[in-house]
Length: 114
Image (cartoon, rainbow, N blue to C red):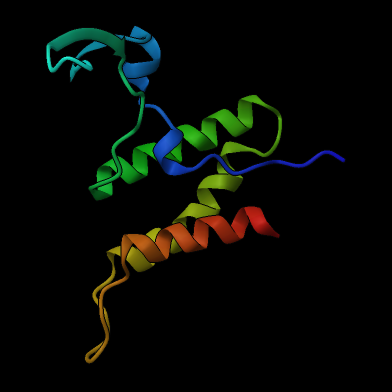
């Protein structure tokens, strides 16, 4: 059976990370004898999702990737993204809280669950 699986937000990369490839980071750890050792590991490639702009970029890159894979048009994905982001940006009615990033995540998961 063929199905499209949702890539978690944390596992998506930025354009800069994709273009420059993996870089390494230095990691310091103690060995069994208590001696501090330095080693290099590949840097984690994760798109940040802390701000509205970072989330929009993440969703835009995913929409472009899905179009390139022939799954859905970029315009159709952007049309779907419009509603949750409209709610995210809107001022809440009196007595209600602002739409949270977590609520966007839930809506995004539902898109791929159905």
